[in-house]
Length: 66
Image 1 (cartoon, helix red, strand yellow):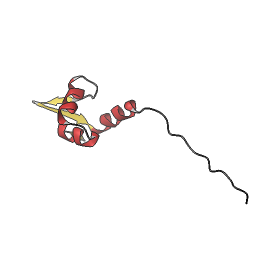
Image 2: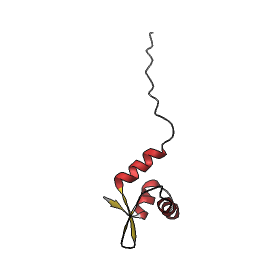
Image 3: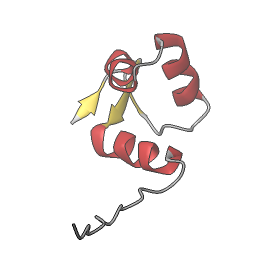
Image 4: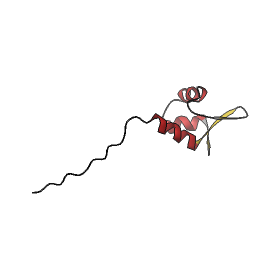
């Protein structure tokens, strides 16, 4: 599914101008359809995965003996 720049900004909870900058810089890939810029939803998810910092830590439960 194609997303508008406004939808991208809403999904990332960022300003519209920052969304335009990320798209214009090529950090978020986009397609030009006429004069409109569109982002494929899956490619936005891939962008988010590349931005992830750190890892999830799995906490093992401790067994208490009372």
